[in-house]
Length: 102
Image 1 (cartoon, one colour):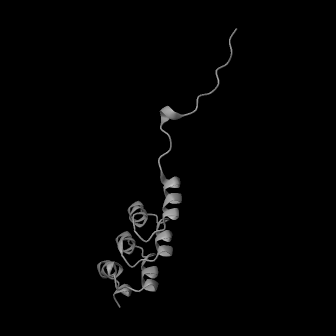
Image 2 (spheres, helix red, strand yellow; image 1 turned 120 degrees about the horizontal axis):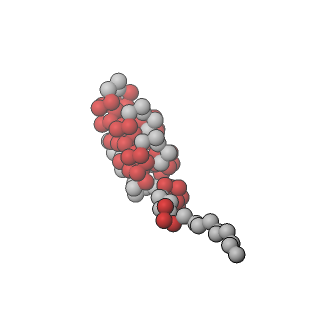
Image 3 (cartoon, helix red, strand yellow; image 1 turned 45 degrees about the vertical axis):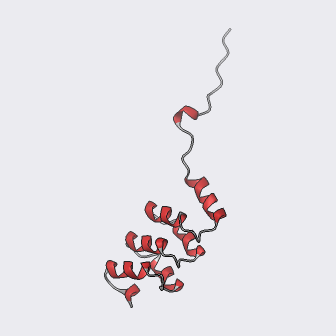
């Protein structure tokens, strides 16, 4: 079985196969190699629940790829974008009230 191969290249090929079953994709989604998890995020057969899990992957490229997957529900994407959108820049910080002088 390709998914159980000791080589990352073979596991990556399995993770990218549209014929790969969802349970195997689930196993590969926690592979120690980010490139394998990236292929799971790109796989057109990846189910929405698995993509949602990949949004919390330690690798930012895996997160962003999962966020762009067409099977990810829009409301999940919207929540992810809220958390990962850049905050206001330094010029947008609220100012402190000035002390009154007489």
